[in-house]
Image 1 (tube, rainbow, N blue to C red):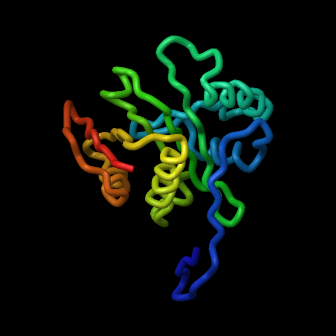
Image 2: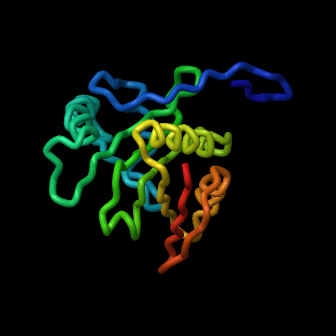
Length: 177
């Protein structure tokens, strides 16, 4: 991939990686920068202590495989997006929906670290999550966001999201894969 930076074409290496037990300091620093989340997106991670973060990873790997899920949970894979080896975003792909997720949450949640926003990474990351969903056999995705979250709405619409309904301030978009 190439990016235009200060009127020059510069090669950019984009990688999407699944959460693993080997994730370390660089991802932890992104989690710290993101904090507890915003606009309806919440993080799954301890953000104050690297060891707590690392200790949380094995359980999250289990959840992605549907192992020992608590009531009301669904398998959920977490992905990191790296640009030139630097983590810039992360997202969750829920493999199926509950009644609650049909109303709010949907199949996908994502967030770009604050220092990397406004660079098109959200749109690119969602595109990659859509490909990951196809790879596990999904044929459509529900994505929800707050009605006033214009940036997120543009990201979803930029990935062929079709607005189904706005209900109580929540937009529900469907993306056919």
